[in-house]
Length: 70
Image (cartoon, rainbow, N blue to C red):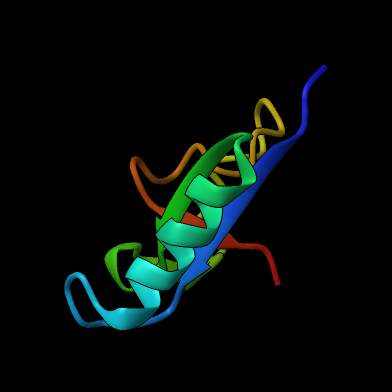
């Protein structure tokens, strides 16, 4: 199992200074890495649709989105 690095940018600006800085740091680590731009992800709370009840898979109600359980 090798180490991985996650770089996160909260800037809404495309190719912002923050994005480039995070990317440079990720490249400098020499490890496998992933870059996440928060402004491109739709994050919203669970809205209690109950679609997860039958199989206990809590993200069954959405596709390609991130749900934050509250």
